[in-house]
Length: 446
Ligand code: NDP
Ligand code: 2IT
Image (cartoon, rainbow, N blue to C red; front, top):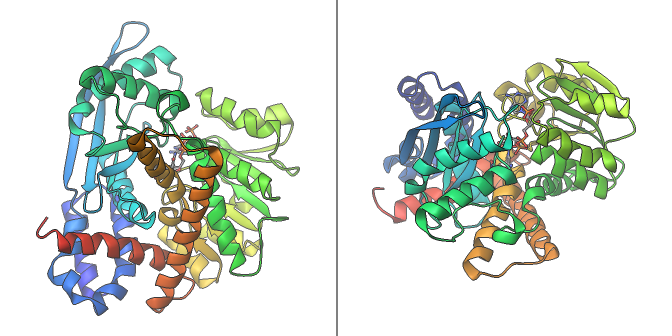
């Protein structure tokens, strides 16, 4: 890292105490950007990076709600409006007890680069709450969502900020949030994505993050003369992203042998396929937080408290949450012959982990490139809402595939142009940055 970026990172750490995930995300990006700043001093003198690490706006609010027994609870709600240089703020909402300001800032920061890579006009944002959906009834979730939106509605809009789902926020929550927004504004607009098909949603959006990540992995494998067919995959998580990943790997002839949850991982040597994929949806909607149920139902091995990275596989796709694959896991995967790691989750690999993959010449794609298919399809949902015309499943899937191939090729060509061929981290960070930075230069001191 150059002296300039080192001092920038030090300042970010000093000014944003107790936000380790945000520090990590910034560190990873600015390290790549040294390559750009050397060639383009104009970004440095315009203090583009210093501006990009400071959110345009942060909204923090109280979310009071009542449970089924009549007891009152108070959660904290957030929306980080990070950067609107290339379009309205766009990004998901996360409901999970681990949510903090720092986690949402890291996610919003990543989202800026990711959305830029999609080539669609979307700025970056993220939000959520420390609300724990685990064990809550539908009515409790509805009351929470209504209370959350009763404050959030004044800050968002189809041309201002368009939230979507993330961990703990799926179709059900988007429905309750949308219903409340509509009541408060008396407007039926595309203010959220991931909506139901009958009321403005897009076909393929639920599957899009996972499908897109597998399309990306396919392109990575092609660069080394491999394909998905016949390959064995380790997948972590069992939520929305993991579900789409498992479906698409099966469609393309690969085999998934692991899933994981906070309780441990399952090893299914015959592959997660057929009715087992549908069972993932049941596990997620049960709000039990357990993957062991899969092992019990299908009589496969369960490893409590462990992550799935010790298994012999060709490809690893972490799809649960941040920092779930560290340096030791990376060594274990490579030792067992893994040739490709493609991130479905946001920042699931630690800096130590991805540096090890890079040194070992293992194909490694960061989430901001590989999981961009979710938000890209949200962008397609916004287009359909604006036109008031839905596209067919094939049309959306075709566009998603084209977008993922384009992001892959942009990563490759940018990494090469900046002297680090095959380095997807540099390719994604630099290409994502350039578009936003140029827009910020064009728009003056914003
Ligand atoms: P889901 O809520 O559908 O599933 C999340 C999965 O991760 C579940 O298996 C969940 O288990 C597990 N998980 C969550 N938090 C933790 C934790 N602290 N420790 C261990 N496991 C955990 O979320 P998604 O599938 O939507 O999201 C998964 C990842 O993909 C996240 O990193 C998200 O940011 C990213 N992503 C999501 C996109 C989308 O469109 N949904 C788009 C791009 C990226 P449990 O719920 O039982 O705790
Ligand atoms: O991390 C992500 O890209 C998402 N959770 C999806 C965001 C979106 O606006 O669809």
